Image (cartoon, rainbow, N blue to C red):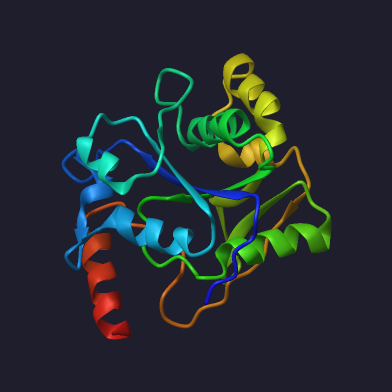
Length: 208
């Protein structure tokens, strides 16, 4: 049973339409008969008491999940940093005692069951400001643990500095990089195109 850590919101970064997959809403692209978003919600729900979906699409299907749907608070589809900011600001307003969020993209169906606890423990061990996941040495900066109290600095970076690249922002802070080792399936494998989807289906079949 995955370990839950109180005071951490799990956020699914669902963004918008996939340009490389016929402009579909990536959340609902089926993988082995199940929408991609279901995989991420199912895994994060076992590790976090509160789940938030960051999406800029007016898709009525999202309401069926009974989780808050939060749009970017800044206009212009500014990328994952804007989604992280939106969830930080939502958390500050609605759950003021909650100090942390963990984010994962909607197209990562193989997330580890100890993602949240490992990120948090790595932050504690290293006394770092942030924590971002690695797998076999490769960093995945969008999959991370973020303190809500950085919302003001992140908003300023997006608005006043026109910052878009997540690595440029995280480089300003101390950051832990816990490694999730794997043999066959990268736990942070993400689906960006039809070829990736076919590969994910193959991985699921071989794992089953």
